[in-house]
Image (cartoon, rainbow, N blue to C red):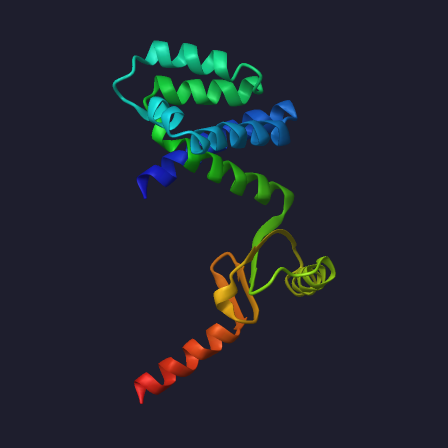
Length: 178
């Protein structure tokens, strides 16, 4: 996808600048703060993405509104405005997150369960996976009551489904093929 490739290029440049300045965590936080503000208010999102609004006016307003952001993050956002790439902000932040996770040697791990897992249950799952795959994980936990019971684990493009709903789906597929 061309936008993903272009977003990765922007994210790589921003990540390298942040790394050289020793501000990766701060820049990442500020980029997330900006994209969250876009997601929080429809009017702000429309203003930021509008091709009709004068770029100089948009730059001035964004620079004033987000003046407390790290200069690297702020100048990245202003560059997107100047280059008419406002619609790529979220993808650039997602690509930045991937680069940051790779730099730490961690991988993304999503744990979905039918009920909230206790901390010791989640920790046990993560420890076993970390030992098996010899890596660190950034864990995201979510709850989906439709799973009935059990846990669904997603690591990148791998998925382990140990849920009742997953097993029922397997049984239904088995019956439908016979």
